[in-house]
Every structure is written in C-alpha cells, then in structure tokens.
Length: 196
Image 1 (cartoon, rainbow, N blue to C red):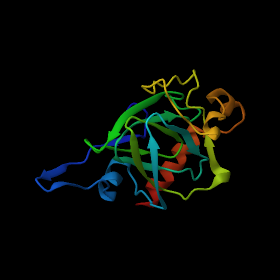
Image 2: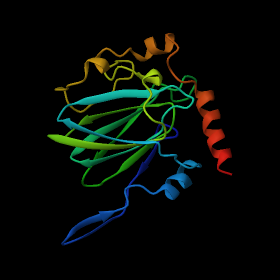
Image 3: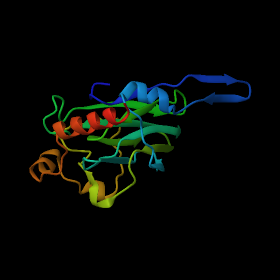
Image 4: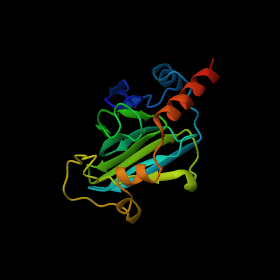
C-alpha cells in the first residue's frame, strides 16, 4: 500500500463443492510483515447499508489503536489516510476493496486514519483492535474534506452526525488533535523492541 505502515493481506482460499475455508488472520504472518506482535484487545463488527461511509477514525498515540480489518459479507471500499503530522505522506490516502470474494484484509498501525464505504446492499466488517475503545482518545477527521479528496466511488452517501461534524484535516491539525509521525515511529519501535 502507498501509505507507509499499512499492509494488505490476501489469504489463500480453499474451496470445493462444500464451500470455502481460509485463515483470515494469522498472528505469526502479520508479525513477520509488521515487525512485532499484534496484541488483540477488542474485536468489533459493524453492519452497514449501501452508501454508508464510516470514518475517518483514529485514536491518540500513544497507545493509539492498530486495526486488522476484513469484510466478512458484502463489500466495502476501505480507506487508509496518513494523519501523522511530519510524515512524508501526510494527508495522502490509499484504498482497497474488501469483500466476500477475495476476502482481503488490511492492517493499519497506530496513527493512521481509517474509514470505509459500503458498496453492497449490506456489508459486514470485522475489526481486530490492539487497544479497547476509549472515548476520550477517539477522534475523527471529516471523510469529505476536499483537502484529502477521497473518491468514495458513490455520490449517494449516508454518514453519522458525529462523522459529518468531524473537523477537516487542517482544523484537526491546528487543534493539536493529530498524531505526530515521530511519536508514532517511536511507539512502533518500542513494540518491536519489546518482542525481542
């Protein structure tokens, strides 16, 4: 992926006349890809109707909240935004379609923003999180901020009141709400050293 730290995972599927089997999460393989263990603290599931946009969400670092995301039913356009002030790719985004055909997953480290748009009539997304939900550390950036300019692939969207009222990238930066790139890098380095 073009946002440093984000990793796309495509599992091998084994199918026959009975259906399909796959390993949608492997801790050892993810650790090899990111350089440290992913500590699972919470698992979330969301169900969205077509055109629902959720995000762009992120958590204060440290400790932040790394996520491992897949779509178990239907399909979504999953979007990752680099919100780390000082990052060479600050303000850029990348996307991948997560669906129940290819069954891809994405890993987002601490400091990146995450959102998605449901592309099917109903989409069920599962998230594994490194930290439990803590409202005082949770933030959002407006998913329709023209400075970020995300192509959500649909004009007919629905979002929550909270997400619609989220500040722009510039407003969040001025308010000091965005994570710092150096702090995120230092946090990741501590995770890697603690695994040694």
